[in-house]
Amino acid sequence: MIKLLHIENIAVVEKADIEFTAGLNVLTGETGAGKSIVIDALSAVTGGRASRDLIRTGAVFASVTAVFSGASGNEWLTQNGVESDDSDEVYITRRISADGKGVCRVNGVPTPATQLRELGAALLDIHGQNDGRKLLDEGAHLQYLDSFGDLADIISEYREAYKKLSEIKSEIEKLSMGEREKERRVSELSYQIEEIERARLRPGEQDELSERRVLLLNASKLTDGVETAFRAMHGGDSADGAVALISDAQEMLDRAATYSDGLRALSERLLDLRYTAQDIADELRDFRARLDFTPDELDELESRLDVLRRITRKYGGEKEALERLERGKTEISDIEDGAGRLAKLESELETCAQEATRLAEQLSRMRKAAAGTLEGVVMDELSQLNMPGVKFLVEFEAVRGDYGLCVSGCDEVRFLMSANAGEAPGRIGRIASGGELARIMLALKNVLSGAQDSWTMIFDEIDSGVSGIAAQRVGEKLAILAKQRQVLCVTHLPQIAAMADTHFEIRKSVSEGRTYTYVNELDYEGRKMEIARLSGGENITATTLKSAAEQLSAADKFKKATLG
Image (cartoon, rainbow, N blue to C red; front, side, top):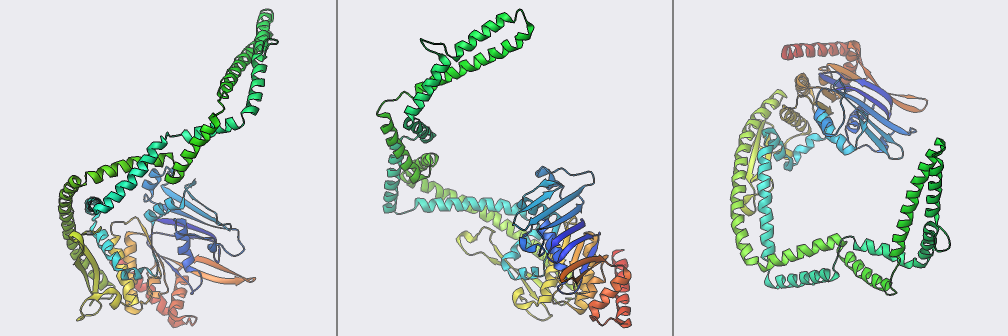
């Protein structure tokens, strides 16, 4: 769970430290006070998008630090070579600079934002106020069902079979092209093969020739310099070179060292210098030999480079041209052997289609079994969220197309519901109100996240469109959810705020022309005042305070009776 969040220079928050607790943490405050900034900060520190627009006006940077406890991130830490400390805590810091640059660190180790998102997915599950709208996307319904049914293994097995089926179909289509197209393709490939083979490519040749060309173009200057240096090192008929002089000096000093131990070190240093000078002289001799060329070599080299440049420009490089050569030969062979290959592939296609169909039908049966269970648990959840007359159904439809299969199997899935007794089920997008969407999403999230008790779940104003008894039920459901995992909730509803185990007030003030947002943990009296404000606005009276106290008392009784 998240223990501490430190925010600095994020929007209107100059500096804030929030110490979260286990259970239900609620954040309330006036509209525009900055409640969602806390969620934005949590998103940023776990790899979410963070632009310099987040930086407080006048500041040169913004930063967020979060401390998480528990073992949720340990597997990620091991995979990414990040050491964990003895406290089993994960420290994440993200800093955004005004110049657009940023840095992320996990336990002090610099971490790319893409990797940080992977860790964030293991630590936080954030649901925004628009998440309910995702239910309108029927393409997501199948994913919800597969997640609930824990069908990843059979889906992976099916997709492997479907991929093989698709590859064979594609190869058959390629081999089944018309005869005229085959002739055109063979002619095109033959020309490419002949052109590349005629070039007699050798990996690295172009670089070698380019280096040789530079030598030849500067041969006279190089020859004079190298020859002079070689004579200076090696000597000639009229004078000794540096190698001989150093050798003489070393031999004389070696003899003298027999009479003075102090000269022994100098003699050894001269011996090293003698070997080094000899090596240099030998390398100069070899380099001088490379400068020996015929008058026609430069022309021949330029001509060869022209051939290589033309081939590499056309095919993308020496390696790419050689790969194109091999592919071209293979494709011509496949086309020429097309009849036999086609018959073999058609036989393989039938076998693959049978296997993919078998797996798709197995997957479909498992989905339908999971759908029956999902319908029951979602309806139970919705009943607890003051939607007792709701019907929730999972509708299946066969996939249209070749073999009745697609990458997801043989099923198209959509969720249907009727919000009121006696109404026929219909598509969620056409029937559900905003408040109903919020409750359905809460029910689904509660059901789908049952196996992920270590996650911290964050709800950012998902209570949109909910009020009255429905709001009370949403608050109770969040309290129950918080028994299993840490829950953070941004809300405007007193019914939800009353259920909090820890209640934070987000308050905005203006000082010397600047806006500041503060986060304060409320005690009992503070909670009573805030719940009274949520219920009655600025008109806080003895009656609204009494009502707030009654709500807190009722919430406490509910949690004791339900959660123990």
